[in-house]
Amino acid sequence: MKIKYSDLEKLNKQALKFAREDNWVDALECINNRQLLLKELFLIESAQLIAEQQLLNKILDDIEKTDEKLSSLARDAKIDLTGKIIHLSLSKKASEKYQQIASQR
Image (cartoon, rainbow, N blue to C red; front, side, top):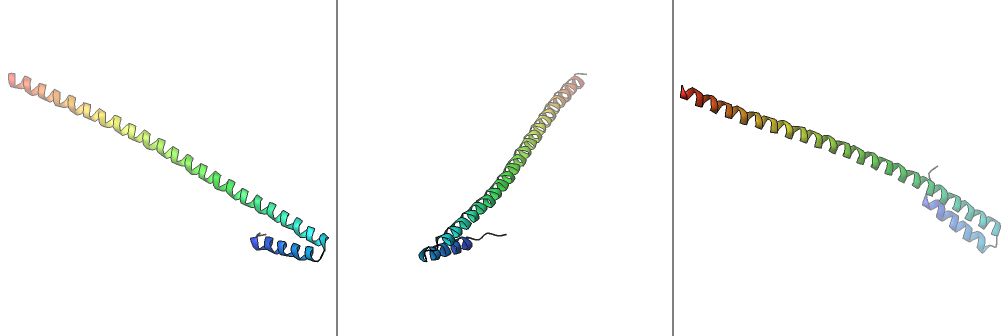
């Protein structure tokens, strides 16, 4: 059942109409029905908000996990690059040393 705000307005108008006619039993029944609809509407909207909050929390968790993975990859890439730079530097030094020894012969 889809609750509409127009349903609440109709119950308000009916309650006023019954009150003007001094039909207090029907007026109170309309007011009670309106309160029940309001409670139902509140519960539905609360459930929707809770579902949206859970979805947002999941999205935030996914973002944090992705961020952690990216940070880890960046760290690994930096370590790998640093290792390659050190290797190239050592290779260059070794090559220079070899050429120096070769030129002395």
